[in-house]
Length: 265
Image (cartoon, rainbow, N blue to C red; front, side):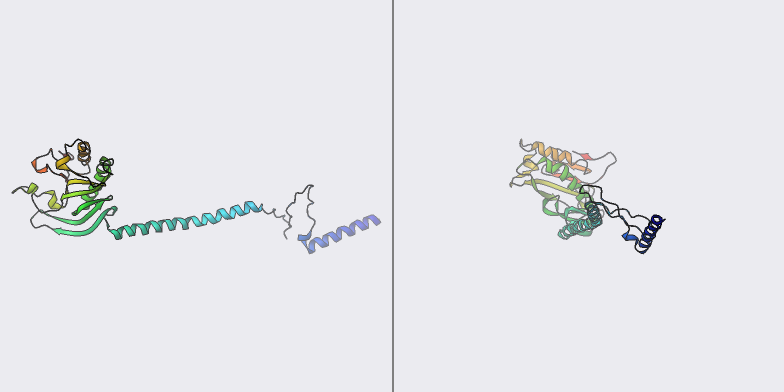
């Protein structure tokens, strides 16, 4: 009877203590060694909260979350830098919506005779890093064709010659005139802002390679023909020394288009 009374008193005391402070209830005893277990906390509802995660894992998660939140900021800064770079290039004279074409916008160029003129002309001074010996007036379609030809044909053809291509010598660009300046002939593509004539190529070492002198020169004949052939496609008309007597000293390129394809001679 005495033992039963004592046991009942102990149980009653424990229940009173638990009700007064659930958090200070009995905790699991560490299992040997130096291992330390996380405390188990009794919630007011009686549920047992899970042990806190390892601090290193928690820190890694926090760092990961931080970097994830910063990624949009990094991307935004990159886009902003690219935008500023494009704006600087535009300020330097990028035209035709292409940072590789440098010059200035001219606008409408009225023709002196019927059939001449350019609606949206530009004055080009450099294309793909290659300077023009004189600023050339043309439309953007012709300027973009010139870029394609330079990148795909002219620069590769002269890449191993005198340090590479540096300048194009422009023989003619916009001019309100007939074809080959012949009386009674049709209006030239030059009169529409769709043509450019190139007479020579200046290399980085100062060497000037001219169509007249070097078309058949042993050192440059292959490069000359590569450039001539490479223009057939970007341009609708390509004429060189083998075309006629009017083109012995220059390449004529224009962006006229024909149903049969480019005319190259």
